[in-house]
Image 1 (cartoon, rainbow, N blue to C red):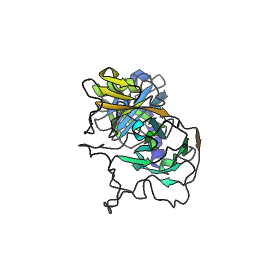
Image 2 (image 1 turned 120 degrees about the vertical axis):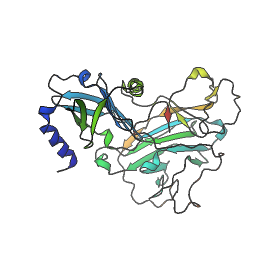
Image 3 (image 1 turned 90 degrees about the vertical axis):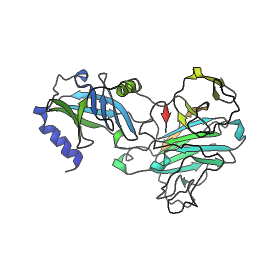
Image 4 (image 1 turned 120 degrees about the horizontal axis):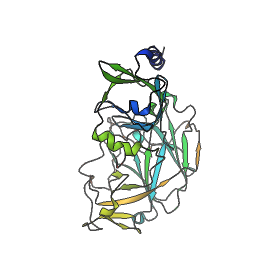
Length: 340
């Protein structure tokens, strides 16, 4: 018997011990279950979010007799594309890739041959990963392959984008599908006077903890289903932000540049964490989604990196090396304010 079915079976035997009943309400089970490192926050309005290392997975839930049915918010797109017009690039194009090291991903520009974004067995990653071409593509196609939890058995694994020809500076984000995007069930019992949540995701039990400031701050973010970010901001080292206080900046619509008050527009940003000068990127949506099998790839990857051959591994050279680089993978669901 699989662990998932075994846990469901356990749930069925715990009905008499459960704190839940036909009359249980969302308000009666609301709270934070788990510790600082991981757990689930359940809110009284039917929303929740699961949190952990590099994971923030919000969704909705409903109480069904002696159990809770959790339904995660699935991202609208697996690949998220942002773009802006960068007059400094003239007719060339620059593409920043974030999160692609987390899976088997593929890229096709126009009608060219499909390439892996990273080589097979890639390791020793060192951001930023930026690809440059002499001409802006009229069509950008992303594909991915993963057997994790069977999430691609019904989902379309390829997204095709046709950006406006004015866009030549791109940010590509990859949200690798994972088990936290699939529905699961939970039950709340009482052990030694403490409410405990157990779910079909894991055999662990999460005791209820008092709501803290962090979970309350997140409540506004997960209070409604997000279908995508409206805008993205980045400095020249591609430190990504989803929200800024625009009153603290002067905006130049010609260059789509935000300059913090007291900063010279031409000032050079030398620190990865420096957000005094930011550029605004617009979201793009795919024109088509379909299923594709990459087949045999006979082209070199967009980026090659391996611990065994550091001298041959990719390093982006045009930028001065920032004092600090991105630390950690993308969250499962892009977190608000900052994307690391």
